[in-house]
Image 1 (cartoon, rainbow, N blue to C red):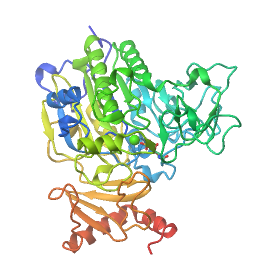
Image 2 (cartoon, rainbow, N blue to C red; image 1 turned 60 degrees about the vertical axis):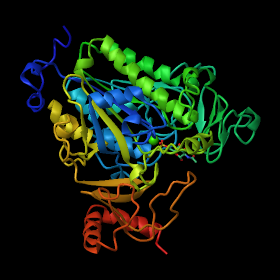
Image 3 (cartoon, rainbow, N blue to C red; image 1 turned 180 degrees about the horizontal axis):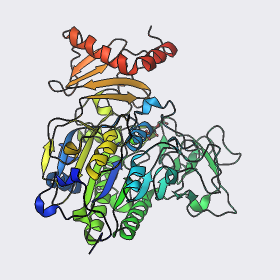
Image 4 (cartoon, protein in one colour; image 1 turned 30 degrees about the horizontal axis):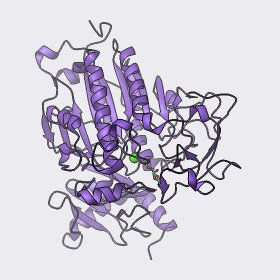
Length: 513
Ligand code: NG6
Ligand code: CA
């Protein structure tokens, strides 16, 4: 008998379940967050080019959410909001972090994983982190404090930042895995260490070429962002990363099978550099990016099979989503854009923009919630933000959610009981720019500056306000600000009431012509 020592479900969840289910113990939560996966990358969302059979089966047996949003179109702010329940733009440091950044989450803050700990859950974080660690000027050769372990996770095994940033090592509970003390690691984001190979000094060592940004230390033939020295025995192998993290989550789930757990599994796919395991090379017929999406689908199937073999699948809520929208060319010459073009693959499923953008594809992400025997198969159009997981899980599990968070509780939406009505207003953030979703409308205020970056994606920076009707025009083809001036000015008023000070500050440093 599992979970014998546990409290039974709290009233909020009991109401959502049938009589026969009321004796269940508290469910585990497995939160899987892919990195830069677009809504058009999964066949359950309509992709006819990439096949993701396993995620399709989770979606058809669970809840497929058509209106799920991240707060931000890049990783650090998106994950910050998800774990803290606070809009990332309230913290000016919540921007794409370098690999040597200090911990972004104030250790005094309440967080989603801390709430889970208070509820008696074992908590774990495995995979992509990108929320900083240490106090800055980190010594990678000593225990790193504070870290994910300080903000609510009992166990962590993390990529400090991104797969394309140094240090290219796994950090387990604040310690670099496999480090040889006689070959200490040094990390620097300003200048190279004399004699260390980079894209500039040793181009012949590269097996993947850079297009933008990635011209620092070469690790496994791939030039990264930033410079590192030493730590050779600890450097990860990109091709076995998927298996490595699967091993860690399987161990975590097995060792906590007798108690409730909250496990965050940050998939490293399909962020650049896209290196799949050998078994997935060519698996998609769509180049390296397609291959790593197929590999990610396999990772989820392995995680779910492990839960099943442990006998805890029926007691685990699986939430699958992505931190921000998709990008094809993100700084490497890896053929992803060419392959997608040739196959007619649109990773954004027709939505405008992409990663980095205020247009819808920046933050509109796939989200599937699966709980065998508990959540009925359904397709939901209710809006839900990843930032709302904190308050919603708090409501479902009876946790204490602090006052004043930006996270809003939608337990019925998350459990697939309410399929149409969810969050009304959401401020979205894209590379420091803010915009607002309200009801069926998207309002993007005027911004100066470039409307694109090195990826070629449109950022939504127009020198005039724009208004979009996402119901009538989900692909944002016609700006209706001129035909609906009343609506545009009402939404602008609402936008300025929420974020006026920040917006004005932004426009002062970056004024409109
Ligand atoms: C950008 C990188 C991009 C990616 C991104 C962060 C360049 C040209 N681009 O600065 O490759 O690393 O940062 O992505 O260097 S995220 O998904 O983690 O937010
Ligand atoms: Ca990302």
